[in-house]
Amino acid sequence: MPMVVDLKPYFTRARIAKRFEAMPPLKSTIMDRYFPEAVRDQYEMPIIPLQVITAIVNAVPVVARGAESVSIDGRGFSNQWVEPLPVRIHTEVGAKDLNDLKLIGEDSREAWATRRQEAMRQTVRLTTEALCCQALLNGAVNYPLLQSNGQFINYKVEYNNEVIQTISVAAGSKWNAAECTMVKVFELLEEMADALDGAGYGGDKDVLAGKNAFSALLALIEDAGDNQRPKVPTRINEDGSVNIGGHKIAKMAEVWRNPQSGASVAKVPAGEIRMIAKGYTGLIYAAVDDLDANLQALPMFVKPVERKNPSGYQLVAESKPLPAVAPKAVARAIVTA
Image 1 (cartoon, rainbow, N blue to C red):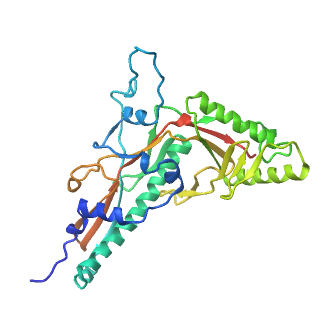
Image 2 (image 1 turned 30 degrees about the vertical axis):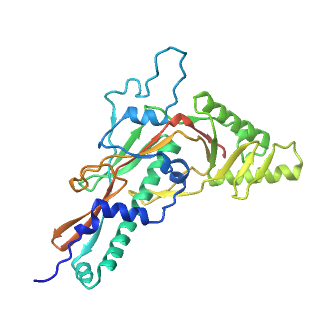
Image 3 (image 1 turned 120 degrees about the vertical axis):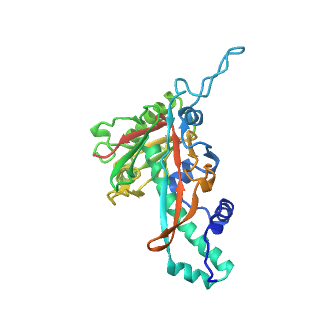
């Protein structure tokens, strides 16, 4: 009887998880910095109550001795849910690939399965990074959703109808304006920090600057040194970031790719900055819609699906990530004209 390679034993939940444990960690700036492993969780349902998100990102007041405790379930959210839509991708395994697998040993087949899983993991990671960028830096998810008819619509997630805070900058205080000074830069950063503190999001803060904004800042620093103006304490760090009066500003010139248009989208627009209060984020993986995964929550599940014409398999991967953010923990400013 001819030998047939069955792919299913290579993509069980246990083997998928074991490979993930052995794979080197993937790196992406926003997920690594603001959605690290410590704030990632798996939720056992395909829909997530809004109060679960609120409990992750919302600060609560203290109460007087003897007073009633404060609920972290979210007021007024008992019937509100968010349904994370899946990141679902596939790769083809044709009859030729299956014939080739018949010629190699078990260890080589495992290595082949690992390579396929790793490639799909990288694609899912890039998509999750884009979702996290939108949620954190824009205060909402607005991502292309491919329907079964091949048409795109927008997948949108908003967080309690909140938006990120916007701080206006006068024309003369734009960082590339002739009359701008380091004092004006410092005053803007202080105003942004006060806005975050006033909304209840204190603690450590980061500032991410788009490429034009960061270039304008470096030019200001150089000009301030040449003209010996009254100086705000300024230091350029070894990692290339800038410290201004205690505020650390890092360049963010990275982009993500829009899968509908193919266009590159700046994580932070070139002429803008974002100040982020740290510690108010989470990343939830909802249960995947697959019986072979026992309908459980997993960061990613892979399964082989046999097809007849042409004969072969599709390796289908699915993940249902949902960034949890507090929009008012982020402030935005347009700093170049």
